Length: 462
Ligand SMILES: Nc1ncnc2c1ncn2[C@@H]1O[C@H](COP(=O)(O)OP(=O)(O)OP(=O)(O)O)[C@@H](O)[C@H]1O
Image (cartoon, rainbow, N blue to C red; front, side, top):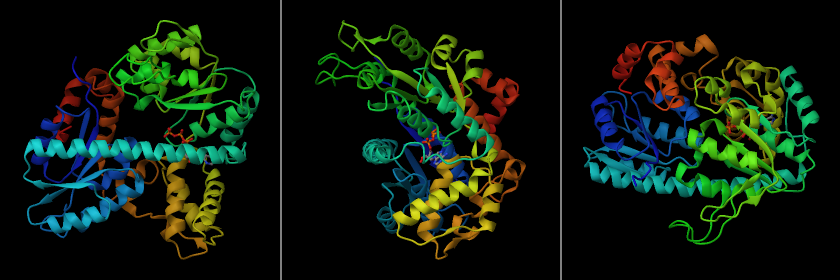
């Protein structure tokens, strides 16, 4: 059987020939290889995709070889994702700089020009490290979540805007029922937070809340992860194991990123939900399960039904009640509340006496587009609290360097480091990912003909 490719790699380097050659070679070995010449759009790329390994050039400006740009972007990448694994691309003679960068958090470096086999070995090792880092951070998160769950009910969900008040009303009404709930909303809008709140306010609150990120389960492991397995049913099945459905028995099962589930797996999930029973891989006796299902996605799931990438019968099964969380840019009045909420949390955590966000900063924040929504706001405030010397946060505290802050809507394209082409590239990448590389569907979505999409793919080296 052909082995499933894994690993999402991003290569950022200003040398287009190098990018092309690396992409052609690495695509044979990894699930996804994206390339980019402009490091300025790293924050946007990272907000849209979870890369396993980022290969980063040290110098982008012509005739500069200090590596300062590389250090700057290394820092930014690690700020955005503390589990990021960065492999630096260095020229011969730059090894000292690379060693210094490793001290600052890079994982490894490759020397240009490289031998393909060596590059592959480095990236495979980096990929493994990434997996370990993610597992560790998942365990830490689970532990933190347990502590949070113990002493909070509804109180940590901030929001007074009309759309949020409506969301709270819906939760009040549906939490106590066993209705299946589908939560829609962009990344970082609080879907998991709301799912946990529903569980805590339900009759099942003493039982488990089991969260599964469907986007991160490989198809080969899907059945065993969700339904469990019997010892010996496949090479890695060293002992009998209950799947997530069984673990959530009597409690709530939260299926995150349900829109990312490939079609064949949708059928398996639907069967389990319909029959209310699961059969462990390698076993033949079905086990009844009693779960309350909450699902979430940031994908336009109704459109996906329309273009046949999501089963209608599955959608009907999971969306008895639908809750749509508005993006942060559509609830500007919540920004001051959220900012003060996070200032108070991080003020305590880092032992700093900060009273609030100043008016100028709030105004600035209300102009920003917040592609990463509340998660992004939360991280920005945490950084600001650590770095500031003020007792009232000021605009300059919030790392609002122009290039990193696309302002709302049309202003987005006028920034120093973003131009129409960058934005177009991002949209094309997103459309292709959404449609699993299906050119006709991606072109339709973008309002382009197939041939003009092909032309753009060629032009941008995508
Ligand atoms: N209304 C809110 N009040 C306070 N904190 C919030 C609120 N909404 C979200 N957060 C915080 O923002 C972060 C992101 O929220 P959450 O993980 O629930 O988003 P999500 O929509 O599930 O994200 P993703 O789509 O990336 O999985 C969390 O730390 C959460 O506690």
